[in-house]
Length: 227
Image (cartoon, rainbow, N blue to C red; front, side):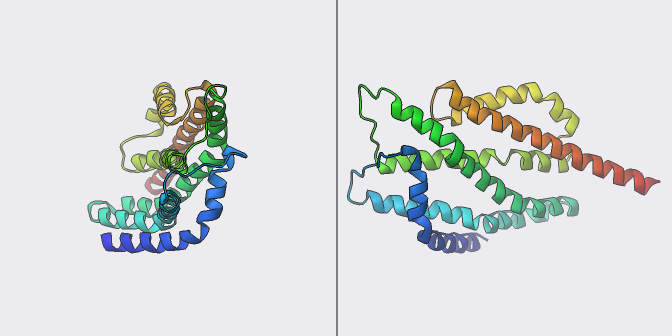
């Protein structure tokens, strides 16, 4: 399974190499007219392959998730296996949506704030390597955080949580999402923190809704079978 994951990563990275330049233009769009500079002869090359690898991971994610799921299948019940198969496309879509939200909504506001910070004292012109490293870390974090509804749904299918428990956890969810937003948000201003916190809490509510809907359907089916 590790070999299959490696092959999927290689193929995904090779395909992604054809889209690195437009991706780089999209990632540097929040900078406006400012073009990031390179400080070493190999910096552009290393950034090129880093972006290709990250996009390759995104393209290969269905295969990677499937291999992880297949490794876990022997220890799961038939019903639990069914839910895992359903989660495979959801994980990929959620990760991509999180990354897109980061690039189109979160980062422009954050970059605009950081570009104007102390602009009368220093020239905020960043290295390409540092800039892309920062962008990709935040994108990855948002992609992972956007898995929240699926994680809650899977935990409910394992019988670890239910909709009633999640509704009772709401006040702690607000606190938890604020802490996560403070960690993920690249700037200390409250506006950018709210841009992250609100979607995170909405994701929690989506997870609660999914758990409630699937739990209600299961209860209805059980009552029908008993009748």
